[in-house]
Length: 294
Image (cartoon, rainbow, N blue to C red; front, side):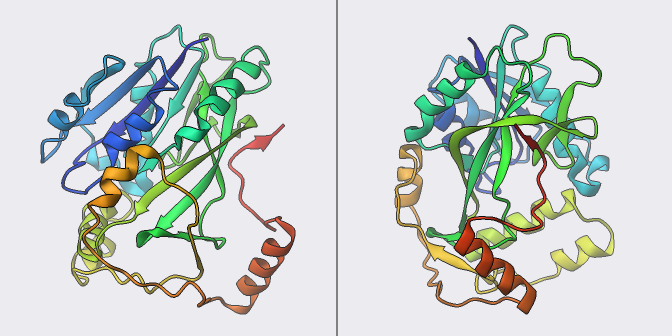
């Protein structure tokens, strides 16, 4: 069995993406790691080249920013990277530049890939998500944060009909408009996209908002304050577990302090009722699922 990892990245330094940690977090699981580096305004390419691993294979790409509406350029670049992994790989493990996988899940992920290798019904593997917010001590626990998404897909040699490809802004994958049949991987992805200093968070938002906004909407974001207000959350809770080992150095460099009161809940009545029901039953009513769980 062979597993290929793949990711895309552009302007990692300017936007303070933990891309090195993201890549390192899945290297023990994969046999090769394809990194597609977009033409950047910083030294992102040198950053990736400095990662000490012979598993990494770098390709360069120029992003077509005319495709930014709805984040389409992210899906296009993800598909381009997917097409460049080794054709003899059985599985393709996708990770984004602000994600990481805890080492406690490595064995579980490999076992899940092996277990479902010969079951052609299983097109992909599903991961739980842990979304950090503000600092490394808080996670979002409301319905606004997606609970699960596909991160490993079958690397089909001769796809039946349309091939598997990135969906919308590459949050997940589909086959054309058809949802993929999945099994749970038994693992989780830690998402750090909302953990930055208030100033750096706003800088990132202004830089990447053009992937989803244009015209007056983008201008409004550019003209907004230069500091992000982390108090605008609906529900948080303290994170009581451990972070991936690859994140420890980055966490030790945290040079900002954001105190958030996780006891505060800011819900409209309907959302409060749905939140209450989910916490007591473990079921999320009316949840959007970008997959079909077998």
